[in-house]
Image: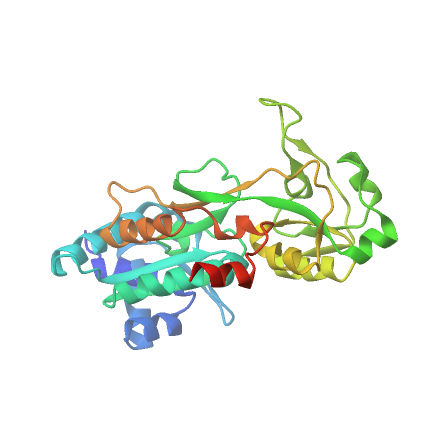
Length: 319
């Protein structure tokens, strides 16, 4: 083999960062050196790995194949070296995590901050996006996923469930009434989620245990790719929305939203930590998974949205 490990790892870093300049900043190297390493790797392998243009850099089919086969191996080698060179109990290196936008900002942010504070030698890169990313191609160590996972080679650890409700504003109820059942949803204005097919979004628990989930496909005037935007549309009286309780709990407590179909609730969406399949997860990945799982060990905090708060008088008596 003529190619060098640093050339291969640099190529993977360029794909992860999306460009030469970003990679140079991250690795604290010159752009010319980054370009040379990738060019040397291409020359040694005899194939073109990157499609270069003025707008973006994308891997070629050969580049994609190399990422798919070598990416997990290279990262496992780096993780193994970091564990050997770090002190006992010290996490070092870089951990890259993909997190859904609303869930990340509303609930995960303080958990991630606590994890970062507990491991000051660890570099933490957090990408917030509601779209499903390719963990291997993107160079991610793990991701938080909400919803049923398609068949894949990813390993998943269940953290908790995101129960969902069909909600609307009191003004919408006054103007249009509430749906009598699932079939009646087609007679109402509904707000859809762009990152999920309508039949998956409007999917409800089976009519009887062991039965098939019930689903309805709706043609909605308003479609958004973010749950918080959907919530605000519903508060404005523009239609019904199916939302995770963690997004709409405060609005329900404040009376800005009400449950529109209490008799039949949408099927809950599992919240899971997923990561690429390797022989042994790195110490930093295991620590991250255990940290998040422990944070939800007592259940999801948003699930108690409909329990009345204790009065100030009762709290005073307990002091």
